[in-house]
Length: 60
Image (cartoon, rainbow, N blue to C red; front, side, top):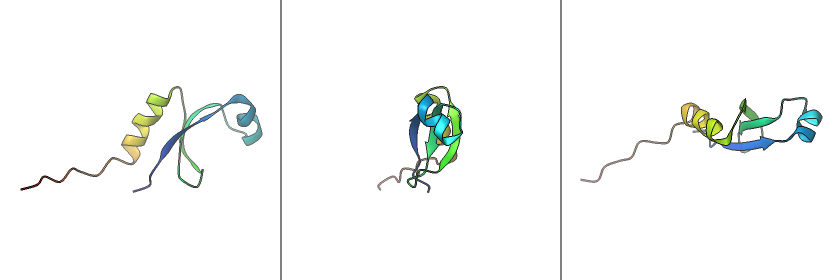
């Protein structure tokens, strides 16, 4: 499990980092995993594809 989170990179920061502005999925360390995405919702969908939540265990 990678524990990814969405992060918005604005124009000023994107110029400094040398990446396009938009939403990125990032690791806890700040490393970009995917992106740029057009919206936070799209980024969250990609995070769910890359790192799906663990299955729910049923109690008996």
